[in-house]
Length: 400
Image 1: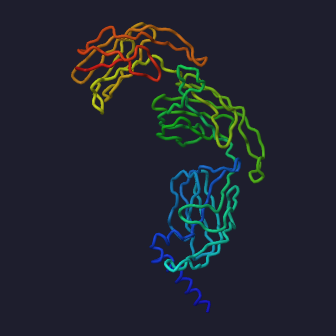
Image 2: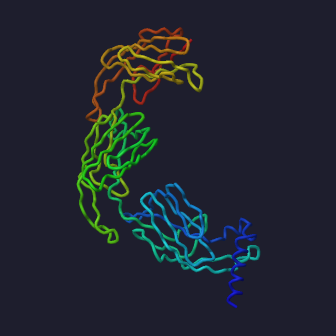
Image 3: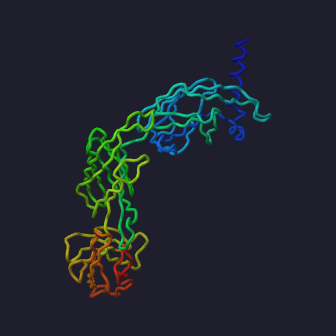
């Protein structure tokens, strides 16, 4: 009699996994997934977790491989079993969980036939910081959650922001998007934020020391080295987490290609808030030439040079405009522009005044900007006779 019952269950399961669920309406009735939601103990809000992969007993499949997970995730359950083990391979480490449940057939409809209903979900083993069962009935692949997975506060995530100040009174300026090669730490071999575009970065400070060196390698701003110094305070906020070392009294020094550094918050929070900001003063000496008649892909510029510097601009570049620095120490700047097949010169004159922005940015302002001479057949057209930041078109030039 017991053998007959096992055969009957096997037939029902096979039927469930087969033809009746080929109908999309029937597939939607399959509640054979367990849902997990990652959360933080500190504020009990959803957490974003780097997942390298999730594996489970009974299958070789890897779920959510190499993803940042910021909401609920769903992993299939084995309807022929009463328990299933899960291995969570996360950026923060490897964790395991055993989920127990009851699986029983239930008649759903004439068209779809019976389905397997999974209830009484329970966690009998895990090594996460804390978990909570929020729903003991299995969910569908489309969404839903059964188990909240909580983590203890991360006490060493340091947040660094990049900001661009403007020639105005807005104290914090605007976000500065840096094209990063990477960010490196003196105590780890890893590369953080590799080939990323970011206005802020988060890196872990060394919990085994009171100093960490952060090396920022930017395509736009070059190398910046920050020496972060701090102190520890031991506290137990959650019983399950025990005593933890919390970072406070953050100080920063170093060599950077930014105009100044400011400590915004001298202690670590979870989620991270900006601890240190690197500011750039407004570039008030940039003149913009629009290349009239340039195709969408731009004109080929062999190079541009200026009379007061050895720096070469726009070498072998396709562009529709030229943004070039004016000489802040002289009332005139001469440029030589090498187009494909022709070389043109243009001289720009202007008046200069000085003004301090944001208490630390002493800037030269340029006004009454005009063309003193040029080799262009068509005279340059004046569009704006003052220098602004971000730049606006000052002159339109035609290579004819």
